[in-house]
Length: 590
Image (cartoon, rainbow, N blue to C red):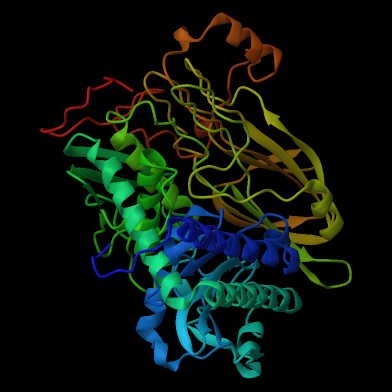
């Protein structure tokens, strides 16, 4: 801190710290308990945060990493468009615009200035995934979208509440352009309520300690996180470390897409340079520069200091360079609905592979780096629309000290699945199978976790299936001699006929169709020959391994073969090495 900053009692500092983190957690609870959409109230696809008056991220809930990193930009971008002097108590602005610290259109942010005795002291912000924001398809996922306009309503920062009251005209504009009007209105009110309570709690904190002291604590939190991150980076050897990973395709063109990164460590700073990444995709797998930075920040914090409080200060020593016009910073009209949760995962995986020689004991093998998103939508018997938005976890990659966890979401996501009972109660669907997928985890000294198998029977007269899934052709990779996990696989059964479903697809369904989802397994860590015989016997006893030959969906007719393996061996990956100045030992083939 600067010498002119006030001295803050350490006890008071901790009281304020816990107060603001509890506010962020309370915001999450309010949205989940008040929202109408199952993707919010059951799956928890939302995030909450607080910033200082300049829009710098101060505190966040235990929410979704991809959201939270993006929200570090949102309020600052918002203030460039809506000056602080134009804001008043009780105003709540909503936006999903990609250029306002955005990610993809279904993620709608509610931003509220918080005033104490007429002084702007903070912003409360929450992000909620709306199951529909308009567009060409129910659920607003168009697998072969060629531009942003087909993906739904793009909302610039507009006030849906002014002075604590709904702005009827603006509300009508939004609700008239999305499906499920009543459900969306309930979600909007839940987002408003969360921010309103956060504002009240922040004013209580300022009343107790004084606004100057609270703002002084905010500044201290940022400085502390910056210092902690710099200390962790300083432990790494200086050098350049390169990594890459691949997307299966973009939903329009069949070719795989490269995500390349060079990580440069110099003293107490770290830079991520994505030069060499594929150009802007024609399909909806583009990611905004905010998403790219968020993924890089997540990877750095996860590897170096997961206990460092995640705020603006934590990210100060981290620089991110993204080539304009690339997959990771496309033009303003590019489609990007899948880039948020698919391409961001490839960014993380590329960074993990780059830094594997530096921190081999902290790296995990490739895991379910995909949302595994399946949307089933249509109309109920009474004519009301329904949209099931469901993600599917897979097997986690194994690590240096343990096997991978089974059927879990990792890295950029923290979304839960929807319970079977809720699906069957709220949608014309029946879940006929939900179990672990044997033989899907990659072999190794530590075995990758196994994936999930779920089967959905369509009970509506007609419906539509949408998929946004990766890891179907480029499997979760093994490290240090570990084998790859099994790729993702989706099948549509209609009578006796079974059809493979592509990773990005919209197709029609009829009553009786069965959609079977088999999520990917995690990659293994270390040589399979080094796995103790007792653990191998336990794998068989638990049904994780059956001895049957694993089916490889990539070899099926029409699957596109295995041309994604450019320069890669089966089950082994060269994760890159240190630069000329690097002092870390190389693990050799990984």
